[in-house]
Length: 184
Image (cartoon, rainbow, N blue to C red):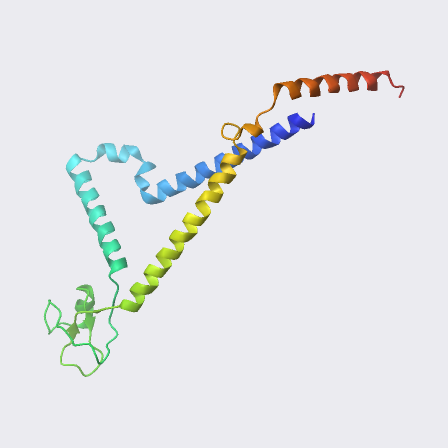
């Protein structure tokens, strides 16, 4: 009875873990592209529109990646020289910001200038990215070992030995016979 209970608990833990990982993967896929939930919507679209949307998404993703590795700031320091924005000098602050330029707040001759490269922010982002990478690389072997240790396919010590199972069944049968002979 104890072996069957242990197998049932292992089976329930395995199903629960598998189900949890399945939900995590499903949520990640859904967050990456919400079109997985409505395939009929894509069937109605033309190939050209779908291709242009894909290219637009790809451009947005590459732009976000470049912005991550090329942070800029509008903080003016005395050592920087102001470079005029490519839009022009006689625009208001809103137009300046829409064109990814910095509006001047002080007594500068330029009303709109190109932002400066932010080395401190880049250093912080790279440090954070490296720390997360090392954390993942450090935890990945532990997670793999934990999963493979529970697996009966990868861990032969988890498999039930047929001779031992037969001995346990014989002892269980003999103990049940003994209990039936005892008076209550």
